[in-house]
Length: 140
Image 1 (tube, rainbow, N blue to C red):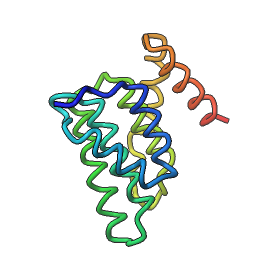
Image 2 (image 1 turned 180 degrees about the horizontal axis):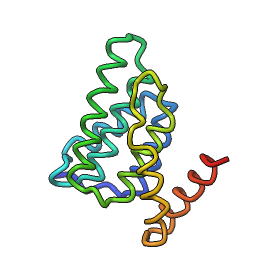
Image 3 (image 1 turned 135 degrees about the vertical axis):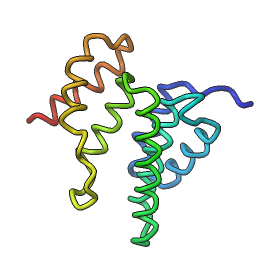
């Protein structure tokens, strides 16, 4: 099996995938071996990238299909690892950015509270900075 990617690289690719379909496809392929059982966090990022494919697709049916598939994957990843701050942050960022007609915002407030309560327990300084900056921006 290929070498496990570094989480910093996955985060960077995910950030770039928002504006590039090529990077989005790359990220999905990189995370292909992962599922909620062997790496819930990477599976969550694969779910997020799958949802981002909706943004890059022109066909309305494909858009909805990518979104629904990614949403189910992300919910499964979180179900498997409910205390994972980064997974909950991923869902929070998605739910604060998707159009309201997709009706995917039911966890937004709970996730925000969870993130605020968990932030001081996060050991990864880079992740802590990303989350605090996002929460600060979202509350303005």
